[in-house]
Picture 1 (spheres, rainbow, N blue to C red):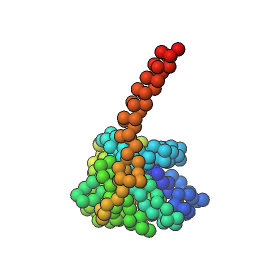
Picture 2 (picture 1 turned 120 degrees about the horizontal axis):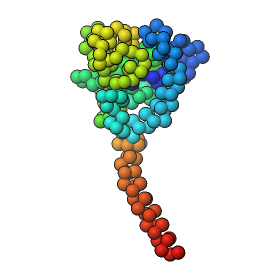
Picture 3 (picture 1 turned 180 degrees about the vertical axis):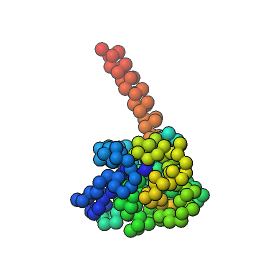
Picture 4 (picture 1 turned 120 degrees about the vertical axis):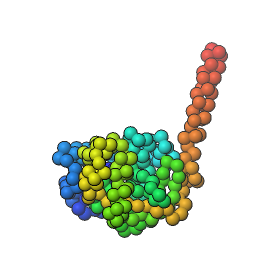
Length: 231
């Protein structure tokens, strides 16, 4: 996912609200139709992230939601630059070499990007692993040229839905031009972070439900059978 968890803001408070929002897509290169669609789309993505994507990634279900068509998702946790609270953002990502890369699709105003500028220490949950790391903006033009087109193509149909060029038909140069104002972020692992299956998180829940639900179903059928026989 490009980064629909945070809208562009002119002045932000508490890492997630704004009293002075700027126009969607302004100076970022989104087409007019995408700009008009952004406010309702943003609200839908916020709800989906809060009630579906974030809980699923916390429970270690990222692998079920990641594929070449709809894109690959990770959970990025930053520290709020004003509140100091942990902020979670489901994002599209790509692994290249020893680093994980992601992109701020609403430019430099994106909340999680502003958070890492204030404090680069982050936690990352990928579908198959978790780690702590240092996030920094990629400023080297050649590294950006090598990584960004591949990252955009890994995001699947979400890229097209936001009005960006078709990543499978566009050349690397076309993708680079369309994403010129989107910061590319490199995350380098520095330590071990708590993953979904570690104490305190919810990775234990899906496996338990796999056997608990059928067990309850069998027990309920037997109970009903005995109740019917008693009558």
